[in-house]
Structures are given as structure tokens and as C-alpha cells.
Length: 342
Ligand code: PHE
Image 1 (cartoon, rainbow, N blue to C red):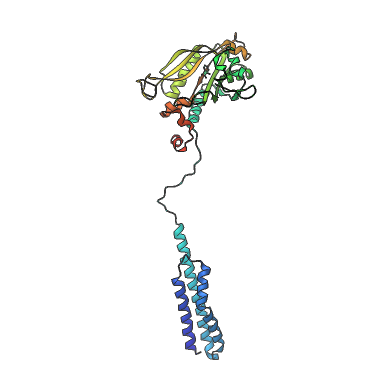
Image 2: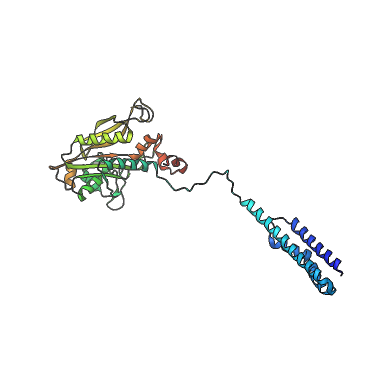
């Protein structure tokens, strides 16, 4: 082999390598492409290296330079291919800036919880703290201590959910009035949110398990004026209207008893489907705590008087958010509930 032949073979090997690398698809695996490159040039490269040693002495220097130049060229070509490969991979992963950002879902409070929190917040400013009691309750707390006569129909098996043994699922939060008065001396001002259970059908305005918020204030010299003033102030703060009315009512554990209505927020009192045409919405039952309840809880009813109320925050949430059916609140449909995220 002459020096000229040596140099032109080196040139051809470089060209052959370029052809293999330029025609390779950049998404191909690198080892596969390198295998093809070897198949094309490895033997020729070894032969060229051997030929180098057989060249006349005076040609070896420039032949050696040519051989090194070929190796550099091969390295460069392979480097080019690897860069093409990296660019192609990057193109597939490139961020599309026109996509809306994905926000992490941090969870949110349920509409009924929002209402409960707001009510608790208002009463906290009026001097009330929160008290809790058990949902599985003894009949004495749910009925007896609350002055239900022993043959009252609410205590029938078909009106209440009894558990095995002695307990029942409480039908209201009023038993916690008695539990609170047993634990704390007056003055007592508490708000009692919690779940209650009734054998009600699941219909647009009833649920068999629902939240209640009980309120209780017991102190010396408390009168019906305190009840009316406190509940009217609550209505003003929560509903933004002081237009309320009290209707006489009956509960065994309050005397006298009254239900409070607030002017309908949906129609402003004109009458609509939301208030069944009355212009009013029923918010709560209330009354002066019956002396028999105070005595059952161990409170001196000669010295202390008190008032109490119970309201249903789900009904209030329906009014607040304009919901036609209470069951929407219990379906756990995230697409629906998300609308109320604050
Ligand atoms: N416990 C009554 C009910 O569930 C509401 C109520 C509470 C009434 C306190 C008066 C006083 O219907």
C-alpha cells in the first residue's frame, strides 16, 4: 500500500462512517447504531492500522497523522449523532406552555361544614364555646333527662334507632345540654355541633343522618329577652337581616318554646319555591330550658334559668347556596361540591 492509497482509504472509511451515522434515526438505540458502524468500518480500520506498520519508514509520520485524524473524525461524527439523539429526546419531553397549570388538590371543607364554622364563629364572638357529646347515647340523656314523659311516642322502637344493649343513636343534640350542665357549673354558654339520627326517609328535605347545632345559655337571671336578643343578633350577622319572627311551639325540654323564622333570603319575603311561598324560612327550635331539665342535670332551678336552641345547618346551607335538594349535600359528588370551595 502506498501513502496515497493509505490516505484515500482513511478518507473512505471516514465517509463510510458518516453515511452510517447520518442515515441513522436519532431515536434508535445507541448500541444498535454503534453495531452497524462497526460492521461497516471495523475491519477496514484494523487493516489500515496494520498497513501503517508496513509503509516505508519515511511515509510513516504523515500516515500516522492521517490515521489519528481519521480517529478524531470518527469521534466527532459519533458525537454529532449523540447530540442529535439528545435533541430528539428533548423534543418529545418539551413543556407545552399553552397547557393550563395543574394545581394540587388540597381538599376543601364541605358546604355544611362551612355553615357550621361560620355559625360557631358568630356565637364565639357572643361568648359561646364549643362542647361535644356522644352520638351513641343512653335513653336517659336523649329522653328522660329532657323531660320526655315515659310513654312519649318519640321513644318507640319505630321512631328511634336503637343499638344492641342500652344505647340508641341520639335523635338530637339536646342530650349534650344535660351532659354539659353535669360537668360545668353555670354560667354556661356552649354551642354543640354534631350528627343526629332519625328514622326519616331520604327525600329532598330530609336525611336520616344530619348535623344539628345546639345552643345553651344558663346563668342567673336569664330570660326570654336574652334568647330573642341573641338569636336576632345571630340572624342579623349570619343572614344579614334582622327580620325574624318567633312562633309558639312545643318541646318537652323547653317552656315556653318557640320556633324562629328568618325572612327568606332567596325572595326577600315575597314567596318562592325555596320558602314554599311563605316568605319565611324555619331556622331553629328554641325555648327557656325547662326547670325539670336543670334539676335532672343537678342545677338549682330556683337560682338558675337558661335558654336553648337547636338548628339544622344543612337546611341553612340549602338556603345559603340555593340548593333544591338536601340529598345533594350527601352524595359526595366532588364535581358538585367543588363549586363551594372557598
Ligand atoms: N332538639 C330539638 C329538635 O331536635 C330542637 C331544640 C333544641 C328545641 C333546643 C328547643 C331547644 O327538634
